[in-house]
Image 1: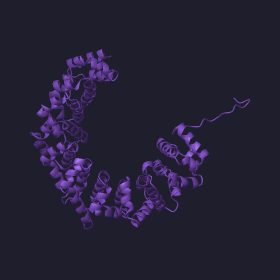
Image 2: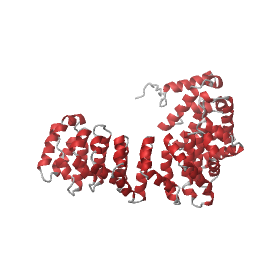
Image 3: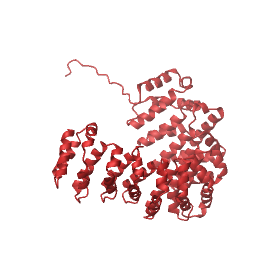
Image 4: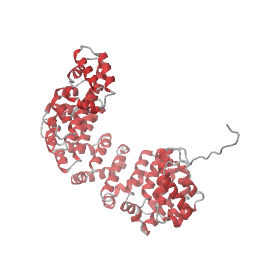
Amino acid sequence: MAAQALALLREVARLEAPLEELRALHSVLQAVPLNELREQAAELRLGPLFSLLNENHREKTTLCVSILERLLQAMEPVHLARNLRVDLQRGLIHPDDSVKILTLSQIGRIVENSDAVTEILNNAELLKQIVYCIGGENLSVAKAAIKSLSRISLTQAGLEALFESNLLDDLKSVMKTNDIVRYRVYELIVEISSVSPESLNYCTTSGLVTQLLRELTGEDVLVRATCIEMVTSLAYTHHGRQYLAQEGVIDQISNIIVGADSDPFSSFYLPGFVKFFGNLAVMDSPQQICERYPIFVEKVFEMTESQDPTMTGVAVDTVGILGSNVEGKQVLQKTGTRFERLLMRIGHQSKNAPVELKIRCLDAISSLLYLPPEQQTDDLLRMTESWFSALSRDPVELFRGISSQPFPELHCAALKVFTAIANQPWAQKLMFNSPGFVEYVVDRSVEHDKASKDAKYELVKALANSKTIAEIFGNPNYLRLRTYLSEGPYYVKPVSTTAVEGAE
């Protein structure tokens, strides 16, 4: 089969307009295993195929791209980098985006190979063309270019090539194309900065990080909204957070939140700014962040009362993030009756809000109520019990009611709440004393889709693995849970059939 493909490839090279041969070659290649092509890789002559890409013929271009994609996969990255340099450069400036994407996918293979990447680093023109691909209209082309440059920057030589040569000027030139392209370059810079303190240092020395931060704290509210997402990505790393703190950026973000009340356009950027602090609190110390930036907690409570579902959703998500660890739970508990009112509000929203906000409320409730066994002190168990009670007059029935609605996402989110509290003795008692609850848990006929079956199984597993469950639920019910667990999430009870005399 591979021999037939080679023969057709030679035929393509011999003819001037080999459309039929291209179709035949394309068809044959689909059946040739990649390992067979690799064995013949040395004999592959791809020049004619690359030449055909220059003809303004749509079908030929489509066929050539598909054929080349297959054949190039059979070649070693080092071979590509050394022998197809000119073809790769031409591919990056080709008017057809499918050719650019093909080329960038091969460059992606090259930059992943430690031996081949040096060939790219020594090819200034190719690097320049990759940079200019960020400025193209096609997002897939831009994303592939960003990915390759980000990968190149993982080495010292790559950082030097990008930031200590004319490439930096090319990068700054591309940024001037339009706002969208400028944000793409910021995205690349943040990706590179997140790798290590040294990478961040190269990026700050280039002036591009400073430019991003200037835009973040500037007057354009739409730009702020976009830039805060990138700055939040930078804050996911320890060295990134350190840099933002040293440069006073975190204080500036806090001050902008303080001034948001007098800004009629604050709804554009406020959700992103609050998310930033929520992530910061979880990654560092919830107590320290909330004590140093009290406006953050104040604004979260305020936003849960908002009539704007976007604001409410972000506030609910942030409460869930903040309460995902014990320190964060304790910070929330210290706010006293205010947090109780917030819980009542979230409980109300989980029943009455639009479906998407209901799910976000349920996810936040799960996060707030979950306590790992090793952290279940008497005080913390009393706290989660009081929080559960604050959600509704009868929280068990509330979540059972939600789980019976005909939306798989809602059903799973409600089951997740029960799973979050399933290993806490107070919750087990509530469940056991709720009429029909144990039957509901072990009833497999309720769930019809995979996600729901998985969610129910997680609940059963959390209950069955608890040390207190046998005592609270009783041994017969405990054994029902263990049976369910051993049968797995997708077990279907066999239907017995009885033969009837005389039946056909």
